[in-house]
Amino acid sequence: MRVLLVLIVLVICPGMALGQPIKVSISSDVNEKGRVDLYLTLENTGSNPVFHVHPMFHFHHSMSMMTAIRELGPGQKITLENKQHPPVLRVGTYPISAMVKYMTLKGDEKSVLHSDSFYFKEPVESQIGGSIKSSGGSESSILKIFLNNQSDSLKNIRMMLLLPPGMVAENFDGMMGFTLRGKSMKSFEVTVQRGPNVDEDRFPVRLMVEYGEMLKHYSGEIKGFIQFSPSWYSAKYLKHFTALAVMGLILTGLYFRFYIKKGNTNG
Image (tube, rainbow, N blue to C red; front, side, top):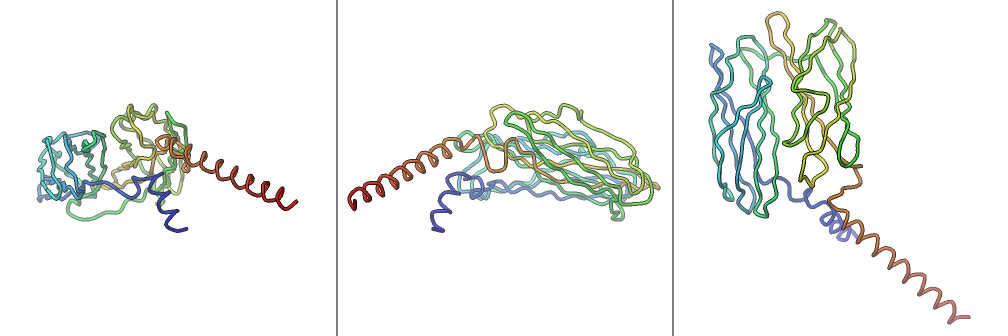
C-alpha cells in the first residue's frame, strides 16, 4: 500500500521529488567605508546540464543583471562577482536576493529565488513581522499580506515585493511605503497575474521590509508562496487526475458487476 501511495505522489507531483538542480549561495564583503562586493555561486547538483543561465541580483529596490552562462554541466560550479551594489552608510542589516533563470534539457524554463543579508558594522534586528497567504484561480492570485509592528514606536517602512519572472502585481508598483504605529497591525491584498507559458502553480514570494531609525538601517523579509490553484489541484496534472478518476470508475464498475453476478449465481 505504501509503495502505491509513493508512486501516485511521484506521478502527480514529480517536482516534489526532483527539486531544483541549481544550488545558489551568496557571500558578501563589506569594508569600513561601506563598499559592498557580492559573490554569487551557482552549482549544478543534478545529473543533466542546464542551459541559458541568467542570474540577477535584487537590492535597494533595483535589479542588476549579471553575466549569462551558456551551459552549466552536472557537478559544475561557478562564482560570479558583483560590485554594483550602492555603498552603504547607515548601520544595519541589508537584504540581498538573487534570481536565477535557466532552461532544462527538455527546454522547460525554470527559476530559483534565493535571499540572504549582510551587516554593516553591527547586526540590528527588525521589529516588523508578518505573514503572506495566497488564494486565487488559474490566471490570477491574491496575496494577503499581514504586517505587525512589534515595538512601541512608529515605523516609516518601505516594502519591495519580489515575484518570479513573468509575474505582475497589479496594485504594487515596485515599491510601497506607509507608517505603522507602535504595536499596531496592518493587512492589505495584492493581485498577481500569472506569467505566460508557465505550467507550475506554486512559487516562492518574498516581501522585503526596510525602515530607518536613529541613524540605523533595519531590514527583514517575509517569506510566503503564491498559489494559482487550490492546494490539492494543479492544472499541470489534470491528465493524471482524469486518468485516476477513470481507473476508479472502472474498478468500481468491476466491483459491482462481480458481486451482482455472484448474487445471481447464488440465487
